[in-house]
Structures are given as C-alpha cells and as structure tokens.
Image (cartoon, rainbow, N blue to C red):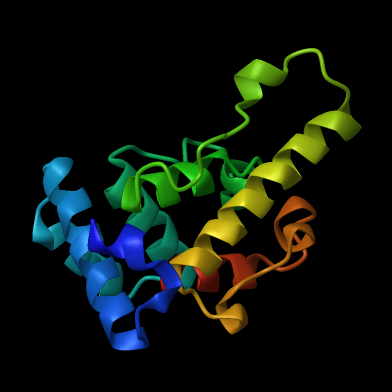
Length: 155
C-alpha cells in the first residue's frame, strides 16, 4: 500500500493516520470488535493495557497462568509477530524458540536479542519516536520493562 511505498517519508500526521488504518484493518481481519480496543483505557495499569492491546492485535492470549510479561516478551517473538500483524512482512525473519532446541543459554539469548533488534528496527521504520523505544537489555535482562511497555503502547 501507500504506507509501504512512502515509509518514513510520510509526515507525522500522515504516518499516524496510516498506522491507525493498519491497526483497524488488522482488527477487522481478526474479527475483533471495537469494544476490545476501548477496554485498553478502563483503569488498567500501563502493563495491562500493553498486554491487552497485543492480545487484541494477535488474537490470542499471551499471558498464560504463571507467565510474567517479561517471560512472554523476552524472546522477541511476540513483538515481531505484533509488528508483522500491524504491517505484514515488516520483520521477514523471526527466530522461534521451537527452532532453537539444543542451543546453549548464551546462543539462545543472542537469538532473542536478534528478534528484539529486528522489532526495534521495524518500530523505527513505522515512525515510533526514539524516546518511546528501549534497548535490548531493557527486555532481555528485565531492566527497563516500563520502557518496553511505553514502546508497545506507542505502537
């Protein structure tokens, strides 16, 4: 579409309008009602709002019982899936944990950081401000989960 051809050449207002169109088209494709998006502001914490928004866009529960937000997002898979749901194909290669069986902890952590880096690059392409970004360490080591939440809500 127009957004993919123009990319960052769009002005801030046009970029925001294009992202809104992409979000609503994504929600329509997944048959999610408007009320789901409105639930984001109903007195929830920022972390809860971010998780709910990701669940609405992806159309699946991401926090199973006993799983923290950090554990759910640490691999970067869900973040890449989120960006790809908003703009299909933006992150063409996502490393899945299921494909990394047998890797040592250090190599697995490197793959997770690669996913997170790809996600952050996609956010930059979509026009997310650097002030609304985070570093891979913020997520991989749970040092700045507030920054991760702020980024997800900015998307």
